[in-house]
Image (cartoon, rainbow, N blue to C red; front, side):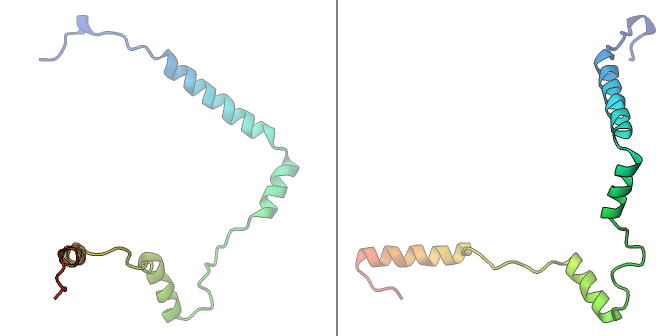
Length: 102
């Protein structure tokens, strides 16, 4: 059964309100901190490519680029499989025992 209304407790939210107030103050200072001239300089540094980087490329080339993004090339296979490690361990034991490996 759920609690009755008389048993409800007030949650302490002072720390949450303080954090939200701090975030609002930080955002306010960020907006006021940059002048229009500085904002213009920032906009000159970055450009937005609206036409896409595939303009002028053939469909085959665009398809290859898309595949490369989705399926990056696999790296070199490092290490040995468990079966290969077992074969090496068996050969080492045979060498220590004085037998020639098969």
